[in-house]
Length: 81
Image (cartoon, rainbow, N blue to C red; front, side):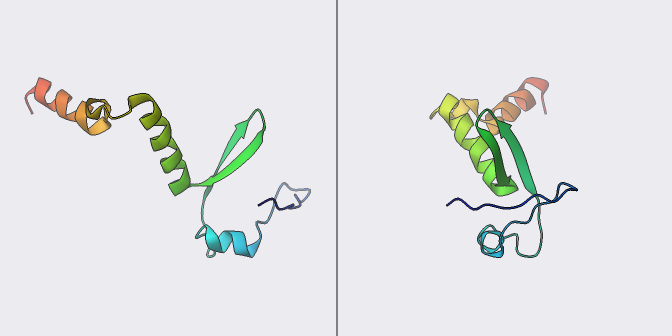
């Protein structure tokens, strides 16, 4: 879906209500802005986390030893905690 929004002279823009509702932002909320070569991507925090997890999975695959939890467990073991 592509929607045109206007940016005011002071830099504000409004997302259409139906988009805010679908994203769970109807009562307000935070979006993360990512600048890319192709333009700007707006993501909710949850979408950003899912995107980061997908990127990590791309590089770690099914290697369970590559997870943050596994790393922390190894560090605790090494330090004697």
